[in-house]
Amino acid sequence: MNQEQMKTVFLCTSYLLSYPDDEWADLLNDCLEMINTVQNEAIIDKITAFIHEIQAIPARQRMEQYVETFDFGKKTNLYVTYMNTGEQRERGMELLQLKQRYKAAGFDATDQELPDYLPLMLEFAAYAEQQHVIPLFETYADNIAEIRTHLAASGSPYTAIFDAIFQVLEELGVMPIAKGSV
Image (cartoon, rainbow, N blue to C red; front, side, top):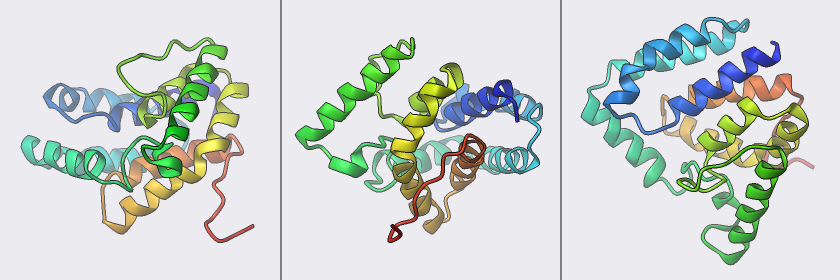
């Protein structure tokens, strides 16, 4: 998979992990069209299956499911540093370091979201050079994998999005370390 295709996957997964309001749903077919340009059948299959499954869910139920999963789920929230420190002071330092990482890579992160918000990280990955992307995901791959594990355990359709993310990370040479190893 080339860099342009990785960018497509990062942008698509970032979008798919954002709040699924009506506008979001209106653009799912565009996402399907984009993802079909990627030369990785596993990624296409995962994202296509997710989109078809989520399109079959009524809008209100889809939004409630998202809120229940990511806003109320302590172990499945999309703020990847939360796994390390929760709301403790150390998290503030980690967030500041992340913001500095983005700035050093020439990425202007919005102040509307914390810098550890996974959709923002994925957007960063779409536009930044690999020399900045790889170390970022090496730092947080285990946290992202932990979210994925909890999603899979609950049977969440969002597991497929995380599987697609890890397909790209694997191509970049980034692999989470399984809990209990090392």
